[in-house]
Length: 120
Length: 108
Image 1 (cartoon, rainbow over the protein chains, first blue to last red):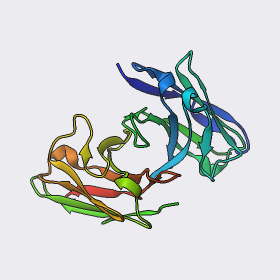
Image 2: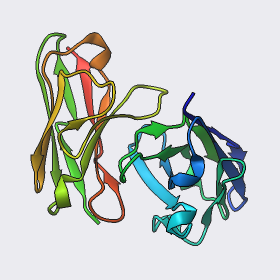
Image 3: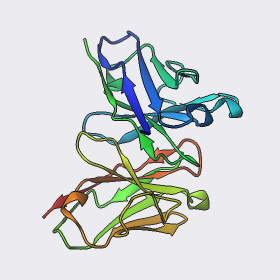
Image 4: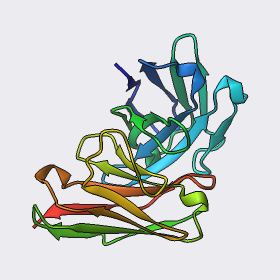
């Protein structure tokens, strides 16, 4: 079955770190860029960042709101993408989704999301 | 970055009626790189339309997309009970990709 499964969410204090994982199955993970999005409670969708496939250099891009604090990486041997979140702020509280697009930067496969709550 | 503005914020209709949702961009979306998603409570977004008018795999033909430049429309020809949800547009013609704020389609 083609799917993405996020894990690693939870409750964390401001200023602390958390690492999310996105485990893929059912497709050739290494061929695709992997993107992360988030959705604050009751709010809309926000792009967080992405990592290109190794064929395209494996480079990353980030939203201005997380640049310098968040890092995306990938382990193609395990079919996992990671989102390392440092210096967390209360405004980072959201459900975090990973997603992949088949042919362009629209996204036809999403995980179910993992909730990150940043609170003291 | 391109700002997408969706209207209306909430749309109240009955099953069987036609729904028309609008997405307006702050600048032209190149190559009609505009997608639409449906999201139900507690679920991930589901891709409906890409390239402004191409239906994603498995999407019923009552969903259609149109538009170009700065004005795009999602039309649901005859609403089914399962269509009541929040709908988002997304542009991917320029970096960063951005989303509209959503239109909530509720049962009247």
